[in-house]
Image (cartoon, rainbow, N blue to C red; front, side, top):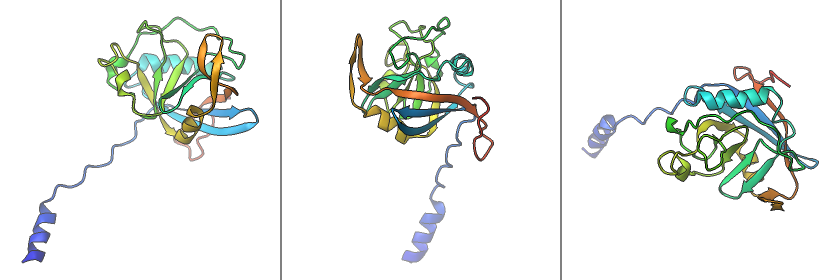
Amino acid sequence: MRVIALFLALAQAPAPPAPEAPPEGPVVALEIRQGANNLGTIKIVLRPDKAPLSVANFLEYLRAGHYQGTIFHRVMPDFMIQGGGFTPEMVEKPTRPPIRNEARNRLRNSRGAVAVARTEDPDSGTSQFFINARNNHNLDFGIAGMGYAVFGKVIEGMEVVDAISTTPTTRRGEHADTPTMPVVIERAYEVDASSPGAAALAP
């Protein structure tokens, strides 16, 4: 009887939920170095379906070569890494006009999520972005006011993000939490997500 009861219980148990399909969208790669060390590559899938303005803005900077040679100038352990705006000499690169905040899209600042960096003005985002090293849901819309707009997610290379987030830091002028040895985006390019080798489409 116990065997029959167990069989009936298993037969009536709900099927486990199907795994969530990975989001579809453009994929970009950031090749990172620190001094003579190649830290690896971070691959990010972008979400134009949820953040069209933020994705278009990011891709325009990327295609113009803006991110090549920029650094992660602000890194905080178990929080996030921020980059896309400064050279290794801490010279801020010129940018286009800011874009509207899209944090209402409800994409969450979870571990691996990529979001638009901004000032206290919600609509001040330009070229800078940050990658969440943990779940930072306090940065979401409605929790942190207007929130920080997520527009992509790391699909490969979170170990690189973690390594960057724990690199030793110092203060350089008005900038705190700056790596003592610059962490440089050596190459930033789109990749062909359908290709097994994710071949580069742009230098």
